[in-house]
Image (cartoon, rainbow, N blue to C red; front, side, top):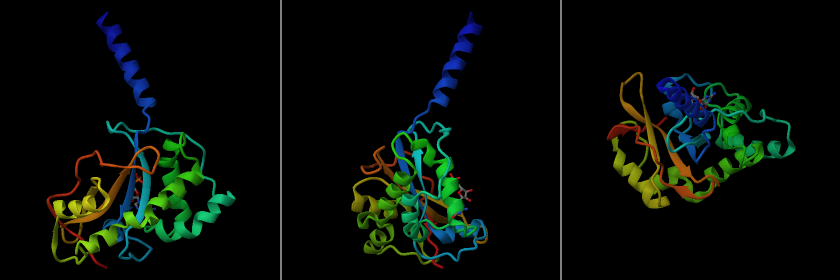
Length: 217
Ligand code: 5GP
């Protein structure tokens, strides 16, 4: 009897896992220099946040396994987005922008196809990146926070400046600089409701130490 119960439990967790739905979006922007100290980049890093991706996510952190339509780069409406995508969503590592968009769509975008088709998904991401209210570099500059490479920034100061400007808690991620072994600002995440418009507090724990560098190229 106990075995049957265990088996039923196993089956239901399997169904839960397979059916894990996305509950909110992480709009992930990366600081190119921090990406490119870990992996060599063909694209020379600029001092601007670029898009890493718009990631359908789950409050319980369940992994979303998604199968949706394959990436279509010939759709006319998608082609119309390409100039802005090239500007804000470049492939830093291999300079193959379409390849990077395809990868992000297939891995992440397809998980939100219940609300956004491919064109809407990329349009929504661009809408966030080009919204002046969410311009991370401008927000931080206004708070007199700038990349220098030398000074250390405090997590709560950077988080607080963004939170004060947008009204919700961002998520910060750091990585380790392989040369200096310092922690450095790598990504800033803004979180949105399933509609891709309403900001929410990022619900995941911070992924940076209390102090870190912010590199300047
Ligand atoms: P995810 O797979 O969830 O999108 O994020 C992690 C991966 O994104 C890592 O393997 C990282 O190397 C990759 N990544 C981050 N930025 C870029 C980029 O600009 N170009 C490419 N090709 N991959 C990137």
